[in-house]
Image (cartoon, rainbow, N blue to C red; front, side):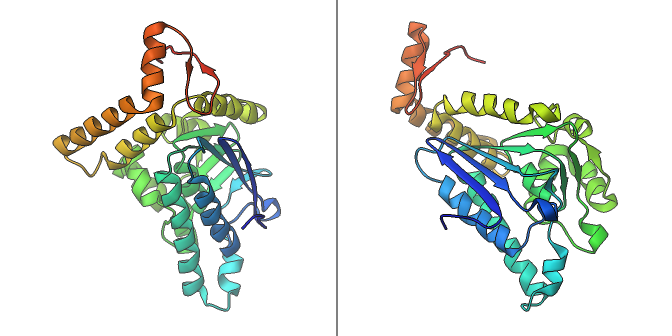
Length: 270
């Protein structure tokens, strides 16, 4: 796919921006959108991509699945929904395992599958007007999109049960307090704050960011010794890479590092 019916896809150098683009339908996901998301994610999972931004057009981030599309499909509701879930899950898996850092910039309501999609960011920025609600059980459905994986790890089982069973709506600031989002910014500053973060991340070392993602994804399933062994292998791999040698040399020389595909970077450890 080179063009999309439900997404805006912009890939320039190491930075890719994806925007859900069904504003008249509150950016609800239908079978076309989930299929296109899986394809777009695969296009991000390539050497040279360092940062991916996922956001949306209009007032909503994503209000969940398109219930009208589900009931109207000639495949039947069951077959249609399973196909949508499979495509969405392919997208989520690719975003989680790609080397590039994923920023989700939540510009409005994130409900149902939209809430699940917001959670998958390595960094999650939320506009002050954004809100978060599971909403699945209100429609007689169960969660998908990886929320049953990420939510318990982010906020614990008790709060996850509350969100999933009562459909409590969280404001952006409540989501921040609960540890669901990284940062809350004024609505009119979401774009500019995202751009600053993108610039900072794009100037970093791809291998380091990829190693962080890999380690954190495995940390809840590995034992201590297994995790430390992987840590040792990955830090050695990073240290022996061109970016690792450049980062160490720059730090010792107190000069700006020049990682592959970037300009000078402030070597201060943050």
